Image (cartoon, rainbow, N blue to C red; front, side, top):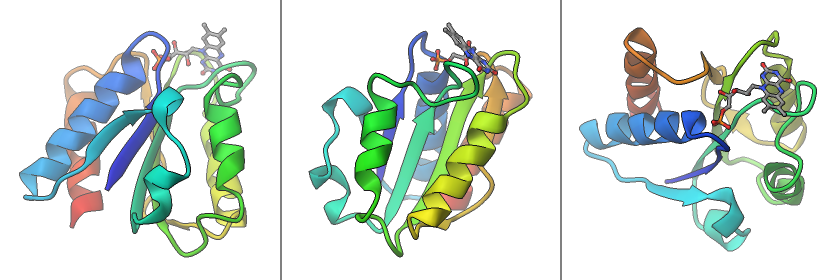
Length: 138
Ligand SMILES: Cc1cc2nc3c(=O)[nH]c(=O)nc-3n(C[C@H](O)[C@H](O)[C@H](O)COP(=O)(O)O)c2cc1C
């Protein structure tokens, strides 16, 4: 299992670490990879892919690193199980619903609805991230 993410100010990165904690609490292992260091080789042998990106632009993925990586998944993730997550600030979550639709159009199977947290995950939101990791690992 790989958790590939983009995070500019650390909020989605904190989510990634909490999701990893949830995965590990189910006695499974996952590797955290910043998207700037990720390539298609990272997903080749993975059945499950966990992708994180915060909302940027105007309800979009980060255009410098995450967008090109996600585009490269087209034709390469049919039948793989995918879970999406990310932090947002002031929008309506459209970036996540669009991202979900896009992954399904690429033939991925979404494990659950994307997990979204406003800004930094604290308190209950930390628990939501850990539970998301557990759900993916089960
Ligand atoms: C240039 C810029 C554009 C943003 N665009 C959106 C947006 O369209 N919708 C939204 O909900 N939040 C938007 N945000 C807020 C970020 O998604 C939010 O601060 C998030 O927690 C950042 O997470 P990160 O630290 O993981 O990158 C934007 C922030 C910046 C700096």
